[in-house]
Image (cartoon, rainbow, N blue to C red; front, side, top):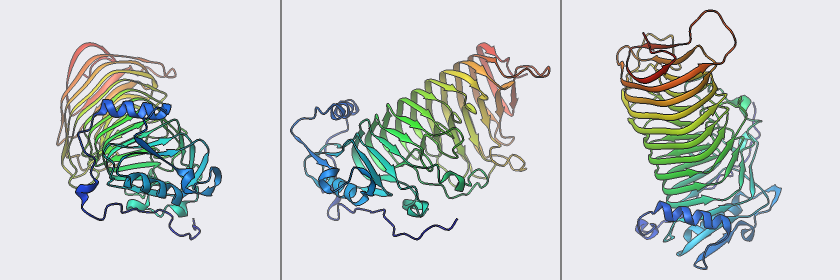
Length: 426
């Protein structure tokens, strides 16, 4: 494809060129207090001590046709530089913006609030998104301590025109398309209530973040849209995802290298590829993954249910303390799977990722595959400490030959407690 040459619209703000200490949010982060602020912002009940910065006052046009990138940037800059409590407002209306970067740190003494109630659409021309590093994504938040993004607004990535150019299904080292949101080095944050539709790439990326909450989100894209992961987490600690509805073309939630202390609770997934730890072992010197909990969630018509996947490479790392509990599967193709031959199944190499202390507890529902449980682990690093506790899955796929409804285990040390359907590995 020959893209039309256009000037780069993504604008990077360097807001604190002086002493960084003068820009930091003061006081410890209180998640409960921040969530109350997010709900109050959505209801328009913030006190008089919060100064509002409306994008319309900075020249943004709510006609859905005029590019308002610079106006969003100016609004954010004014709110972020304000030395008091501040809220940036995206009111009801249709807005069009290209790729932008909201760059911190900010001067506000408490979390900067962004209240989004409008419909914000991305430019659909890929020439706006030049690819690589900071130029890849649509809306990037970077180096901010204390952020509340809340509201009933919708962020539409207009990705349908771009999906045919996604080649990641055929290349392990591909150039990904723009995520709707990227949060990089954003700490003490709550993202609450917003909607994401049809991203060019991922819906939401969370990388190098700490104390990050994603609540009450609705993320939607067609089931055949390529690489449109819902929430993609890397190199981050203490990330909590709850009460979200995700239907997309790839993993509903994916947690890759450096994901530590991640909680997924009460998430509805489908369509999509399920909840995934990995892919791991894709890059050199990957950080370990541990303390992952996915619980009280459901999957409907997904390719996979709960999955751990690693490449067959020489990159050593560890994935441990991973718990999938109280899950409901509805017509899921591969309900429970560990796949250490992901992406290069015919290679003679073995995965150097060590998987241990993984628990599947109270998982019930239906499978459209006769092999509902599959552990395909590394010959050089067998899976250890895999526990199956009360698994109750029923086959509802099309009638087939006499193949039994079963589990399949290779190079895996598995223990069983309670009901097991399909039966344990032999």
